[in-house]
Length: 166
Image (cartoon, rainbow, N blue to C red; front, side, top):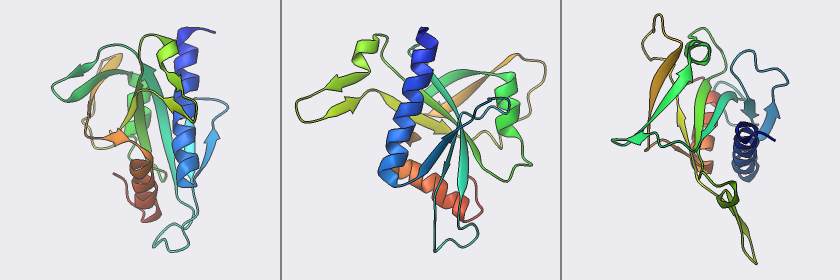
């Protein structure tokens, strides 16, 4: 398997693990023609707007050194940028970038009592970012404060249950 495919599959597994812990469902897109790799949804009986909220995620993974001044400077293909920025969507879309070590052997650590996944995911909404012209890639600044963990995933799906977008 190509290294890029390994990163993609590890990223899906990483988000699946968090969604499982949160009690949320996940679904992979068979064709990624709308810049969506994974949908996450759940049931919220007390939701004020949407009882079955959903969010859509564009997953990217990299081992490149892209962190500078508290941000991941991620070069996103223009098509992905435009698809994620679309302001006429009902389902909120987010960019999720997983930073992984160069060595695939360091992605998972096996311990006698548990297994741990390494490194960390970060999320970003570019819905309100400026419209970009004539570029094949757009550098997106993802704050390191926007770490995607189980609590953050639940926060994003809770916002969706309220008809909101982060």
